[in-house]
Length: 314
Image 1: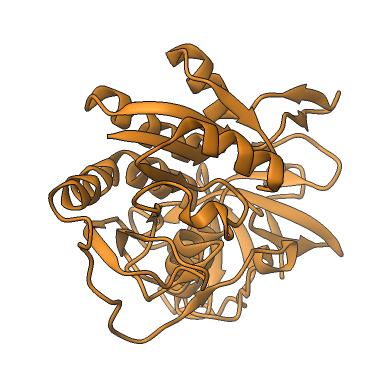
Image 2: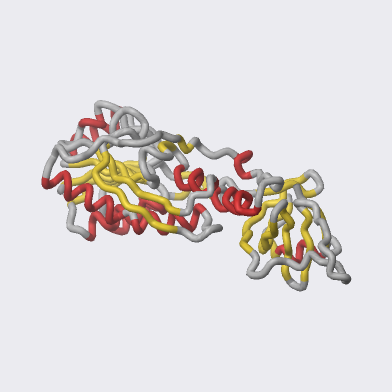
């Protein structure tokens, strides 16, 4: 099938490569314009732009799918448009330009978690079975007919970054199945059924951990906000980024010398042997790597030794 592909981040690259590997003719690739990255703010092509160049595919760099994008796409005379995390909306008349319209690979079990950050919101809500759905793109947000879907289980504490990397590869199967379905029946697809929820765009404040909640909830929120926008707590009124947090292999010893249980306030951070233990209301987590405000990331144990082996975060 002759296809226009639209995508931008690393998570869209496996889908582009899969289309080429399956023998589809990718007539052109739309991706967002080069963006300034790093401390020196060097203009850098998107991962999809790099992959398209490597594959020898025509590329249009555009932050908005306007009349120029429409004219470019129209000249390609594609059978189908495929979009994976492009970062912008496809509106009419571009939406109807390919013969069979557009399909989207979305990282949720639609209609659950429609919107910008489905994996992050699902993980933060404590979900460990995540989904991919390939569906027809329509004017309403993530509301088109479903062509294929699949699920994948993740261990507690799996970060959004790790889950997206896995799903981006895993999801190519659902994407290829959707294209095969359209090739066999141009009218293929089933309406979405079930309760709708929305995965709103993340903000920095979403990364502020609530250390008054149970251990499982703190770990879930941390996982959903890592690596972006970044999970953090406050230490001495400054943000302390928590780059790595994980369940303890064994519960921390909270007994005194006489064997009596010692009450420890949630948010207390203690160095036990070589392990940094974060106390919560119903258990503990291991703090592995942190980044104090204005400083580089470091081992949590090194950070805590500089504070006498004990402190409190909130």
